Image (cartoon, rainbow, N blue to C red; front, side):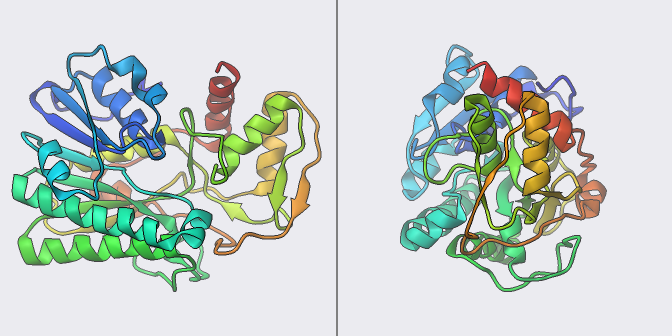
Length: 326
């Protein structure tokens, strides 16, 4: 992966911190930065959802550094930010169902932890902090495609936490002149995403079912739709947002491919990639889920030149190959 270079700068002169760098998206960002010669790539992770396996290949790289710690501790955040130029903040507790089952922990990590990172990054004088926002912020707003300035009521505790991140980002920009960029991810998928556990995402679950020759469960009637976004598109967005110039205020942008796929269509494509023909099993819809999601990515294109390179078909083939090889 990452045969395309998404930057023109010499990365060897910069030191990066990736929080949640042992997680799915974070470890892919680390991979890109190390591949293109970043001067330092420091990972901060508490391994609550991240995995040592995701970063094992990087540990022999002299530019790589790991701090095992929690963003809920301010002093840990300050230590992790020493000497850092740029921050990609991916550490969070994802999953709508997880937040419904345990809203307090989701809030502690996603809100208090995020605020710690903002304060520590501001005080450390970092050049830019880019953070993982979420398409869940659109809530019950019915409009499609989703445009950044039109949101509805949040449908889950998780969605509330990610919206609060945006509010804090805006306040820090106006109050402290510390400008951050929030990337509203739309259903990111790809290599290193965990297919195990009660909060696994749909694509790794579907692929695991296909590899086992088992019919998957689909929540609802299968006509729920998502703008599935291959992880390299998200990495591109992080790199371009981190290095963007002339950002004079807090910004929030959609990061997606810009194409809507139903769960029924998704399973059909997984069948094609896996060379199988299995019918799914249907069950009741999940609480807190948005019914349809589709992004307008114009703002990200205009702000820092984001142009997604991987549609769902290309991404599914790469992802299937990855899981088949594990």
